[in-house]
Image (cartoon, rainbow, N blue to C red):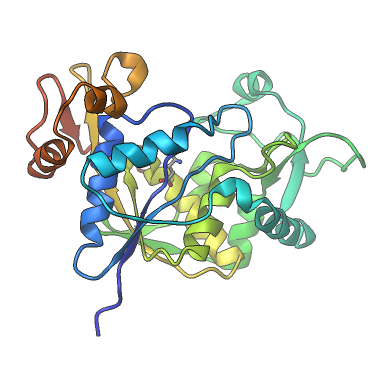
Length: 285
Ligand code: GLU
């Protein structure tokens, strides 16, 4: 029996959805067609940037595209699960407290990784000062010693050896009581909790998957497959985003555009003028 495919669309309600989000949602939706399940998860963990009112707009946009989904709990309802997982990693000696600022990291970094300057491990081994506000980073080398070599499968790029060390030691617990977990920890735990079997998202998150695979091994989570789809880019090759002038889905919707026709156009690769698909492998080793 073929296992049921469970995919997801996991937008952060930090700004309006645009065409790139539509491509992501339609891709995930269609991969679950034929008896699968398409899950919507609102990733509203960022207490500062999240705008709760946008969740309703996101739903209206998806319905306008002609999609149907099963909605699961938003991240803001799951904070205690993230804290428990972090506590487990901390108790296993795999997290260390870090007080470095972004500027300090940029100044001290000796390498650039898929997501910018690679944290050089400044605080690794530094004694913990009780009560001191700090972020908590995963000691990737120690974690990999624990798990051994790992691999994961992308449906488009094939079998991958997990290389989480390329991006340095990531923050898993932010130094921010309003947003205790990082995206990486929260999304990895949620995909497992939501029964996701095929993580569908853009190629800009390809490198993050190396870390997510490591977290799955450390936390005994099931291992899904991944589908990193191409990104929509503008004439300059940059990822589409609202701030670069691409109209939001809500603007298209309220202007009377036909959402189902737009979804079909995306399926067929018929893109508006000036927009192209890019299969550049962001963050690939
Ligand atoms: N919440 C993330 C975003 O909106 C997507 C995360 C994911 O698909 O894993 O960019």
